[in-house]
Amino acid sequence: MEIEDQKVPASAPGNVEFVELLRGEFKKRLRNNTQYSLRSFARDLKLNDSSLSQILRGRRAISRKTKQHLIEALGLSPDDVYKLDRAGDRAKLMQLNNDAFHILSDWYHDAILELMSFENFRSDNKWIAQKLGITTTIVSYALERMNRAGLIEKNKDGKWVNKLGDSTNILDSEFTNTAVKNYQEQLTDLSKASLRRDSKSVRDHTSLLFACSDAMVPAIKNEITQFRRKLARYAQLGVGQPRELLYVLQLALFPVSENLKLEIKENSDETN
Image (cartoon, rainbow, N blue to C red):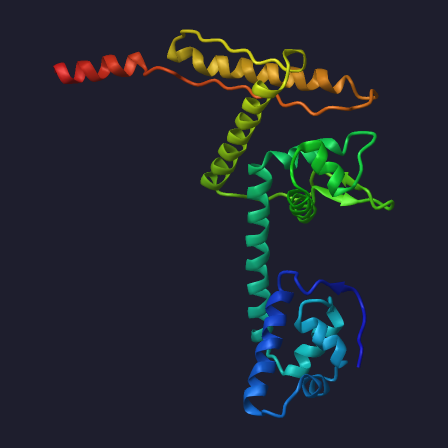
């Protein structure tokens, strides 16, 4: 008995738990009857044995009608179904959080999105990997994550396009901070590699060491933010011209000395 309608991958959150339930039920029946077989299981479930075999191995999508049919054939209660759905929701949330962490952490996700603005962009893992100097495996995982997160999709021509986001992941601050730190560390490593590899004609590594008051730091940070936004707008003026290169602008403002104000206060406290 074959029931077809819109299919959901067997690996999708919720279906994973359902397939595990099917496997567990089959094993239980095997233990109770050594003569029991996959064909017997398919007969009892009123399902094609070949289709059931592929479902159990995670190689076949499960249609919603097929899933409902199996729920009834197994005699699952509404409470059993609810527990399965809750387990699927937790698995989906964990997957989204994991995807979001990697998208925030790993620089090549942003880079792939930017590559999609190239006129000659190719939805080919090998081409993307060559452009960014990463492996095709990394490209494959990155595309899967961004697709699940709703950042990209394939158009009617089968080409990846940048959707930039109908999906929002809410993460706790510690989680997000860790991801952003990883991202910045990766960009720092890329900057070091460029410093060693590239000529001055294609890069600009400059720095400024200066003294200032603690009260000025917020204003300085604001100036950096305004400069970054101005540069982004300036880069957008090039829309209409062919895009051929990806660049990173990494700005860092950080202290290299202890705060003299705190040192004075500590000395004052010790004296008192």
